[in-house]
Length: 208
Image (cartoon, rainbow, N blue to C red; front, side, top):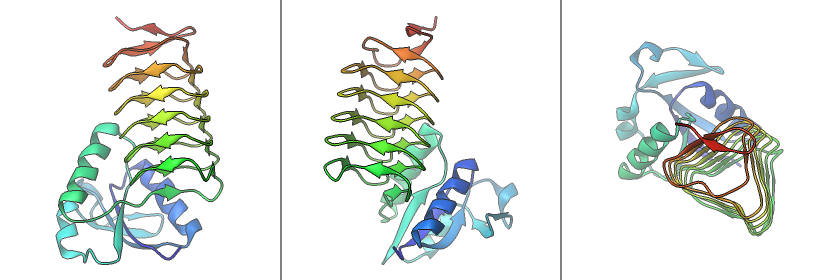
């Protein structure tokens, strides 16, 4: 695609982001991370040149940012920070991801390898649909949410803002998971989950 991209955050998720950018033919301008211990280190052959403050020295014209961390709180902060500095975040779609042309993808969302996003689905700002996760028709994934590897959202499910759906979890048709929730790995969600709730098990039960 020949985009020019700065990857902000050089954690483990950044390796997947960098690999995807390479497969898409995009150009990686720089890797940044606030962890001073990483300065000068290399990730996937690219040198980490400094912290977020380095964005002030990079031209905004023709350059996009991509967030290289999966932590919801950090992703939200970095998304806001890059916007404040005048950058637009790349919506990253792995070549093996399957997405309907009628699905709506917001700025900065990431569809990783083998993920599926079906017709009428909406993926919010800065959200992740991770490796082999499936989002069925007419689902809604709100801003900054993370659908973990292998998780399944059945038709018309809704996942609230800043919510994590753990690896291999299943959200049944029409079920609504609120904002800032955590759904544990392998959990089967059969009924609506209120905001700020953690659930685990089959069927899902709130943690005390």
